[in-house]
Each structure stands twice: as structure tokens, then as C-alpha cells.
Length: 271
Image 1 (cartoon, rainbow, N blue to C red):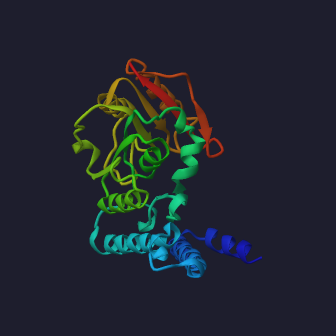
Image 2: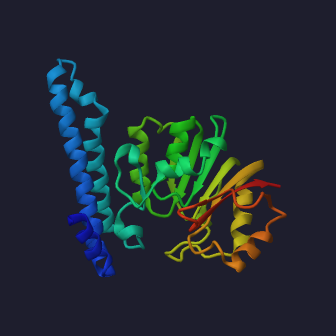
Image 3: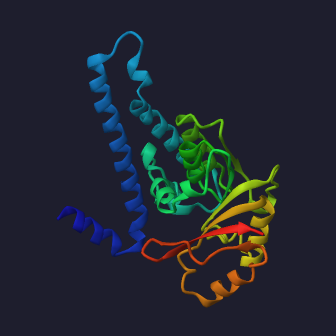
């Protein structure tokens, strides 16, 4: 009964959503602490003078969680620009119990990214938020991955997580506007996940302009993995705009519909 009441209470009035997010984040923090505490209690049985507790990856999650929360506090105090998801990470990462809206781990699997990214690839993730998709690509495949996002605090969280997973040498994250980003080398794979326009209105261009930019980042025969916004599927003007870039990319329709058809995922090869 309590979960039903909670859902009804918070869904009834959008003004309650920030409180719901705050409570959700606090519950996630509490869960991380409780899991770490349970591990510490178990480790106490087997601990020796080598400091087993300090090396336990689950126990170390508590330190990561604290560092992320400190970053979010500094963002709330210092960052005057638009923040997504009421200042919490828009992306979540189940692997490290990082609270967020859209979990990177299931998206990586749902989009079957393992089919398109290998150890040999050099991947660019644009508008990457915390860079968790790039991080997952490096962690799962061993590829090199670079992510860019306008929010330096989300980038900082991504770096903390990359270091925690020991993929900091493979993952580089950069706080920069896409309009000001100059790639130092071509990429074999570019990820554009719901970033061809942004809610903060910092980046509002046509599909053609966006695709030309993606095309410029790619090596010959490179892949663009493109996710739509929820507002795109079913819109005639969106599909018409996509047809105008057939000279830049080749693709065979929609690779996959996700989120009950709210979004579409395309695998597009550079011409």
C-alpha cells in the first residue's frame, strides 16, 4: 500500500517531483551505505593485518558515493547554468549504484552496443552527461572512449567512476560545448544519444547540420550510433529530415525501437 500511495502522491503534482528526486537519491545513498556496512561486517570475520576492508570494492563504493555527493553539492552552489534532472545525474550507473534517471548499463545491452564496438575502436560520446555509456564501452570491450559534455560537474562524476573501475587510462572526459569541440583525431564510432538538440537550448540545429558535424568526427566507413528523442518517432518532419542525409550516411531503417516505442535507435555508416 505504501508504494502505491507514494506513486500517487508524487505523480499527482509536478511541483512535488524535486522532493521525490531528493528522497530517491537519499534512499539510494542509504542503500549504498547499508551494503557497504554489511560487507564490512563480513570482512571483519576474515580481516587480517593486510587491510582487507580497505580493498573491498563494495566497501569502496561508499567513498565513491560520498565523492559524487560532494560534487553535486558544489554544482548546486557554483553552477549557474541549466542542470538536468533537478541537479542530479541524468544518467545512472547500476554497476556502481550511482543514482540517475536513465541507467547506462541496460541501455548498453538493449542497444546491443557490443555488436558495434570492439577493443580496436576509438569511440566519441557527444553530450555524454557523466559519460557512463563511454565508460561502459571501455569497461566491457577495452576500447578507447572520449566523452564531451557542457557540464563540468557531470564530467567530474564520470572521471570518479572511470577511476573506480580502473578504466581511467581508456576513458577521457572533457567539459566543452559541442560547438567549440575540435577532435584531435577521427573516431571509428560516434555515439549521439538524444543529443541532436538539447533542453537547455544551448544546441539547437537542424538534423542536417547535426549529421554533418557527426560525419566530420568519423573516420572513413565509421559508425554513427544514433538515438532519437522521445518526441521524434512518428513525426513526418523528423523522417523527412533524416532522408536528407542519405548522402552522408547509409542505414537500413530503424535498428531498434526502445522504451515501448518512445525512442528509435539507428546504426548509420559514414559514406
